[in-house]
Length: 249
Image 1 (tube, helix red, strand yellow):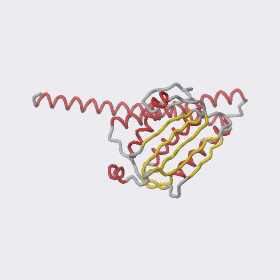
Image 2: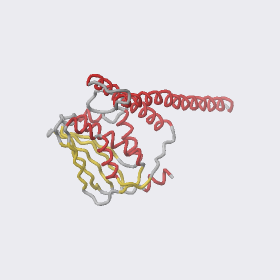
Image 3: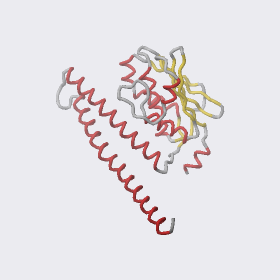
Image 4: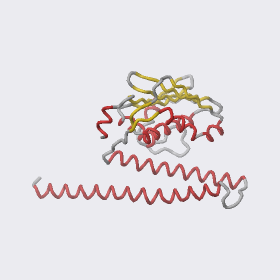
């Protein structure tokens, strides 16, 4: 390849990258903005700002609201996954209390817990809950694992969250009681895939992105089940992730 051809190749490649980045930013704005508007309007309707709703109306609007929220999360995850795969992905690290993060996330799904009569018990087995990492992204990881655990858990069951040490790592384990899940299903759980809205196991690219975020923290993500109808979704990261911190400064 001569100099002229090389220059042409690099220029064309640069233009393609610019177009691709421009497309994803347009996608983010043009899809997320109207979905947010729909969610806000539906929330106003549900809360009775435009008049009292009967039960049938409330059920329909709540169902539509759930669908819009699901679509918003899917679009957000698609965009985040694209950026992770195609851009210089850097963590925004800080020191934070991982127990507080877990408690806040569990509180946010209180309505779901009540409707399914699932009790969540947090069992800390360590004294130091402070870690260095990207708090916002690690919260997304825990949310993804928690939602999937709740989706496959039996109603009227107890879901346990263990926080324990593992060598130099801190390990967060979610144990639920649900139908046995095969090793093959768990093996494909964290691969990039689009799943159907009502799939009980796996949120597709959400769990794929969760795995990538944990790996970026020099940690690992774990999923397995046993014949006692217990399933486990877990992740572990270093207590003080100095190597990761150096990469992100």
